[in-house]
Each structure stands twice: as structure tokens, then as C-alpha cells.
Length: 337
Image 1 (cartoon, helix red, strand yellow):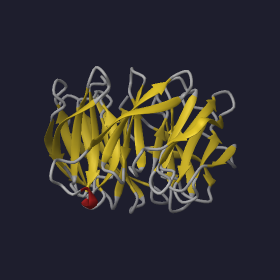
Image 2: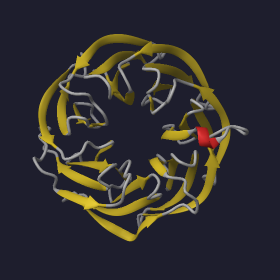
Image 3: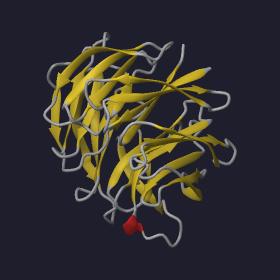
């Protein structure tokens, strides 16, 4: 088995493209995938046949057909936006593309046809607050969460109507940390009713109980992503991911330039397990679908670093470094075949 690995470079008009050997984690460079504008956030159909890309500086959303054998992309459709979104998420039915808008302080929903065509206008635009940074629906596709960094310092909570794609504010409409942590990105636990948000301004991760009937969060832990003695004023966090088996959580530190590893306890609490040096300003990282490898990109270095993951301990072992485009910020895995 092999994976196509696409690196979205916000400072270059192309995806860097690699082929990963699933047995060894080795990355074989492939020709760049040229695009008409610099890419940002990416959403992928579960079968890997269609990719949705925010061409953020051009203020466009575009869809592409993916040749899973060769890894090439063919453009299907595009639609214009008033502002480029920092995050995209395809709902569990594949019929709606959700997006968040940092400057405008809003979220939007576009319709997606089976052939990848995007609705010309959003089906819905809903105001939230400044610095809306990401959006995802839960496993049941009934609710959506939208973290906001400071000064909003909140996670907005919505009902999501899967037949229509409509978002409506939940009750309560948001939760806020007791201190100005600044939630940025988050991850649903793959099997348990838990949500973990990584907090940009506080350099922390917050653990939440998720009520699958009400769609609401209740925080029960806040833990630092930094080692003792490092000044959090010199750091911000960026991304958070959970291993497919749900045993370990990973977060990126920009400033300390590291990947923090936590074990997830039986009670859902996080226990710090260590820090691993990575590329300068690690804005984004991703785990291979198998959970055996991790790739991280450095916004400051313009490079990708790969690691082997020890399934029993969560420990990361460095494998290789590769140059990519300018200001890389997103990584997408597509199974070859």
C-alpha cells in the first residue's frame, strides 16, 4: 500500500506531492501539482476521489477530481468568496462544505453535488465572532463546533441539519475558557464522547466531555503543551490530532518548534509524554491514515519532516526531511489505488 501526500503551500501556486511507502514511511518526491493560485485548507471525500481546496489569497473555493493511481488533479469547479477561509470541512454525507472565516467572524455552508460542483453562492452565512478558526461536525453529523482564538476566546456550538446543511445556534451558543486560552483547532475522539481543543494563545490543550444528544461541551482539564521552564509568551500552538486508535494526542508548538505528545487516560485526561523537535513554525501536521507515521511542515522552514510513530508508546522517531514550497500549511493523505 502507498499514500499520495499533498502539501498545500500558501506561498506557492502548487501542491508539493510525495508518494509514501506505508511499510517504511519513506517519501518519494513526485512532480509538483501546479495550481492557478496558492492553496490553503483542503477537504477530501472519504473515498479520495474529490478534493476541495481554499485558494485563499484568490478568494475562491475549487474542487478537483483526484486520480488515485497517478496522484494528478483535474479541476471540476470553482466559486468566488468575499474572504478566504482558513478551514474547510466536508460533512459526513459529502453534500455540504463547511468553512470558517477568521477576519469576517463567520461560518458558511456551500452545497456540493456528487460530481464535485459547488453552489455558486453559500447556502448559508452565519455571523459568529472575530477569529473563527476551524469547523467540524461530530461523528453523528448532528452538531458542529467552531473555535475562535482571542479576543473572542470561545467555541461556538451549533445544531447541524444533515438533509439541508443548515446550522442553528445551540443552547448555549458557545462555551468560553475561564482564562484567555484562545481555542484554534480541535479533534473529536474517534470512539469516545470527548473533544480536545488546542489553544493558540494559552499554549494549552483543553479536554471536554461531549454530550452526543445535546451537542454541547463541558471542559474538565487544561494542560500545557510546553515543557517546564519554557516561556509561553514565546510560543503559540497550531494543530491537534488524535491517533486512530484513540490512545495518543499530538499538538504543535510554534516558537518552541516541537510536537507535544500526550497519552489519553481511561478518564479522558491527558498525560504529557514528551516533546519532539520539528520544523520551524509547525503550522500543520497530519497522521497517516494507518496511524503509523506523522508528517509535519514548517511555515518558517519550507520543509516537511516525517516520523515513525510507536503505537505502544506514542514516541516519534524522525525519518527524513524534504523541501516543499513556501509557507506550507496543510497536509492531505490519499490512498493510492
